[in-house]
Image: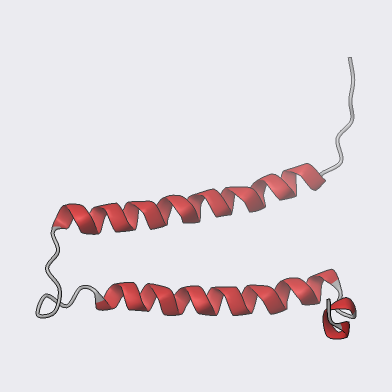
Length: 80
């Protein structure tokens, strides 16, 4: 691990990694959009739906991870 990463707070580390990963994902999504060019590629509606349903499922799964993380951090009181 390099010294710059060690000196980051968890919040700073999150922001740094989130920005890199989201920007890389945005670029990848734009590249997927380039596949829509019918002059270069041959695709059908079923294939397009499969792509976007899969992407949506991954987004939904990841969003749920953040919701679970928030609820796990809430204080709970146990009672019988």
